[in-house]
Image (cartoon, rainbow, N blue to C red; front, side):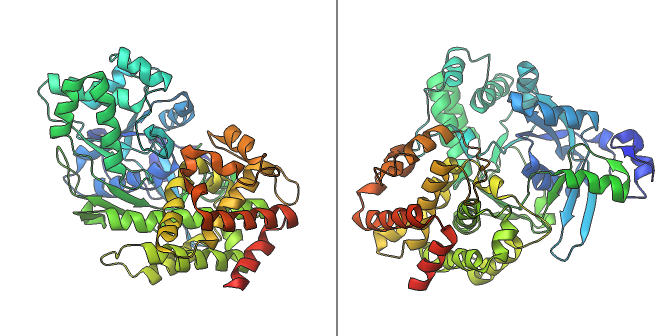
Length: 496
């Protein structure tokens, strides 16, 4: 089979092998600028927009990708060489695979090279939404107080030099300032990150920044810019060599950075936009007055459930989430956490049967064809666990509810951060901006069992709760003593 490099010039040769866009990409306008073009954006928002563009009258909603960091250079280079086309590979639990070329991204600006061009693009009249997938750590807030962190050197630079942006807040402020000066309506700022009340958080942080940099602009933003809260969901593992090999072997396509995902997809959005929005309800996107119950459900069940599997799984040596689910101890432990600790402190969610939702999560986690790595799930745990797991623990502490499962996961996180290898002696792949601080705190655990918890920026006053400390101390002693996370998980369940 002849291999064709993925780009617009080869679509004629590829179209009989794989589904290609049926819309004229040359006629699209970039109504959306998206900051943070990673795998999740390409499997989720860009996929929804791709489907929308295949309907008539939607050409105003193409996407211009934008990277603010040097780390975005690789995806910029790859997509530019491929005319911003890429393949979405959907792997079903039964082994079926669907592959589609996605054409909704029509441009990409690397803002670290061309900051003025990036600001101009966001300030352009065609731009009606600026969306974000910048990860939990990109919002620049203190994990305990929630206050904006003004100590970051890039933030200090931007406050002193508004025309030389470095961070997402500097770019948003510069573009909104330009729109205001040009008499244009503002764009909507649409967060698609796994943060509870993500839109409200983006609003709070941008207003804190602009109040310090340009108070007059801050007042205009507060009055005119909408920041809808959203809940996003689609498991999207890191692209692997096997994905590129599959496309070459099965379709004769050379794609340097395809995306693999599960078939499940969900997007719930508050219907509050500053300057119009795409009619995504035609594709099943739920527009609701309040997204809070949906996002809380997802964060405290799916995202927390991932960590409940991933951190102990890393210690035990399970390579993927589906491998964890194939282990009955891990699968039962995770479901017990959801049933006994997370569900009782959730709000009712209209239109959602929580038991069926949890059943679906188990099926999704167990998908043998996704192979979502435990390392990916454990990455940036310092940003994830305070938001995904601790609220459930704190609610149960306040209500006198059960805390055993969540406490064991925190003890496991300490052990993981301390030993940095699994029970077989293999080094763990740890990716966390706080990895050095976590390791320093955790390695004191042998002489001070509470050492890990003294990181108040992560745990607040958790160590002041005697019931929690009794349980945590027991878990630490058992884990460090027997060095067998699976046996400890089983003993916890045996005591229930």
